[in-house]
Structure formats: C-alpha cells, structure tokens
Length: 412
Image 1 (cartoon, rainbow, N blue to C red):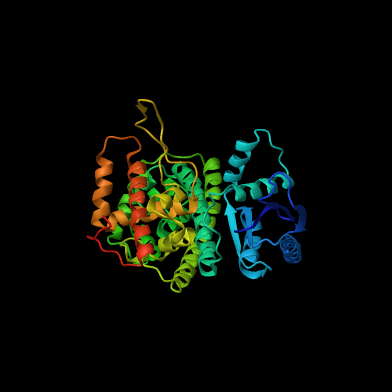
Image 2 (cartoon, helix red, strand yellow; image 1 turned 90 degrees about the horizontal axis):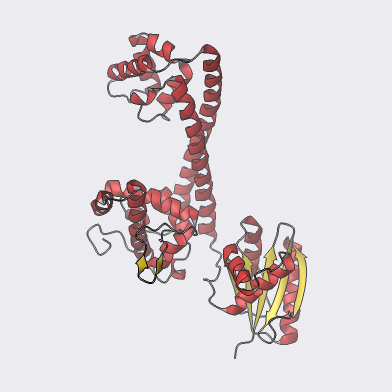
C-alpha cells in the first residue's frame, strides 16, 4: 500500500514556505519550514525532505505549488528534473492560483492570507485528489513558449500604439483611410511623416506625390497616379487644424511612428526565431491551410503535452473557448458568454489561427459563413470564436495522431 508525503510549497520571489502533510493527520503538519528561493535554498529543501522520507518511510512524494509565473519556474524544474530524492517516486503539480483560492473558500470562509497558511492549503489540495496533469519539463516547448509570448506582448503594444496613432491621424487628416487601407504600411507611415498637414498634402503637385509613392512604395503600388489622386482627394476633404494644435499632433505622431517601426522590426525578428525553433519540433499543425510557423508555435507551446487532455472539450476549456451554462428548473438561458478562465495566450493564437484558416480552407470558410448568417449579436466575434472552437477539435486530433491535415477527411 502506498504511503505518500504531500508537500505544499508557497512560492515567492525571495523564499519558499513549505508544509508537509501525511495521510495520518491532515490538520497537524509533519513539519513546516522556509528556504530561500535560489539554488542553495532548493538543495536545502531536498535535504529536509530526504530526512523526513527516511524517518517515516514514505514511498511517494507529491509536490504542489501555484503557477506564479517566473518565480515558480525554477522550483518546478529543479523538483521534476534536477534533484534526485531518496524516494524515486516523485510527482510535481502546478496549480492555477484560482483553484487554491476556491479550495480555501470551500474549507474556511475567512481564512487568513499568509505564506504558512497558503502552503498548508496547497498540501491539503494535493491530498484531496482530483489533481491536474503532472508538471513535465519540456525544454524545447518552453523555450518556444518564451518566444511566442514575447511576440504576443509586442503585438498588444503595437495595437495600443496604433490606436493612439489613428486617433491623432484623424485629427491631422480625417479622410486619410479613404486612400490607405493599410495605414501601418511603410508607405503610409512615410506619408504621415513627410507631410505636416492635410493642406500641404493637398497642395503638393501630382508628379511630386507620384514620385514619392514610387520611392517609398518600392514599386509595389500597381497604379501610383490613381493612388496619388485618391490621396490628394482625401486631403482636400479632410478637416483643417489650427497650426499650434497641428504641431503638437505631428510631434505626437512622430513619437508613435518611431515606436511602431521598432515594434514591427522586433516582431519580424521574433517570428524568424520562432520559425527556426519550430523546425526542431515534430508537429503537423502547419499542414492546415492558414496556419504557419507562428500560429503553430503559439498553439503547441501553450498546449505542451497533448496527452494531458482526455478530449478536445478539455482542451477547449483550457483555452477558454467554452461557454458558460445558465440553467435553473425549466429556464435555460439562450445567451451565454465565454468562460472567464483559460489560457489567454492559447486562446489568442487559436482565434488568430481561425481567422486565417477561414480565408484559406473551404470547410472553415463555410462554417464561419453559416455562423455569421445567424441573427445574433456580435456576429463576427461570435462566429470567429465558434470557428476557433471547431479548430480546437482539429488541433487535438492532429496532435494526438500526428497526422497531416486532410481537408475533406474526418476533421470537418
């Protein structure tokens, strides 16, 4: 019969509080201690656990800690990968902090908040059963995850800077978007910088404007003359700003443009690194039309080991692509929302991938069109979320079977 030791660790930036429970007495820990959250501290933790294991003859060690970002990464890695305990049967679990919080509320409505108490609740949660999939250290995937999450944060920053730029651009040239569909293209940003006002743009000679567009468009504009006429027309019809305000707007836009160009450059650099890194990891997600190296990397790095999910429904819930249920008696709500929990990085990459796949794959295009035609609020967002949910089933199947995508196969 197994005789396990349950070890809860409350991780902080400077120290780790440890609480050890056995099956014999839940309320009275075998021991409590704290160690520094560094390499000497984790080795000290190992020595203490080895002494307890030998004294009480435990044959299984279960470590639990909250998923607290960078602070828990080294602890989980050392426990699972680098430390050799006297007991060879070692399992590490990383809990979502929300799970521990709900567990505390279920057992004590007014539980105090300190490191010692939190460590006890983590150990008690280990002992209660119904545990998540054990933590496993997968260095290639975790390294890839750092790259895809860095790209995610750069994209969010780019969106914020772009929104500020667009608000200032409207003040400077309100009809500018009638000429440019891609307002963040290199040519568009060059026009914003070169011409200080809508009046200056409108009064520029057509030949000079055409030459400017050819130069900065690198001969990629199909008909520069028509494009130049559209741009002058937009400048003519735009509102005018007083000079004092125009100078402030131009200065703010110049700052935005510098930041945007830097972000675009860094995103390109990261995407190249992501593509190179993905080449070392076997996967078949990029066989789906519309899913390139970036989206495939973002998805597989967040999923990790697909075997920890028993079904595509579990994977969808992990990604936050599941809907709440509101039912009582004979009442069932017709309008439900996406759950608030889930991995926001995985949800982002799945939705972005779905938006790309629906353009290139007829199966997903038909599904998106069908959902868009339904008379519902937020038609695009709803249809895209449902398309991403459909994509989850395909992703789950391909990762489980390691097969290539068959457009007219069983994945529809």
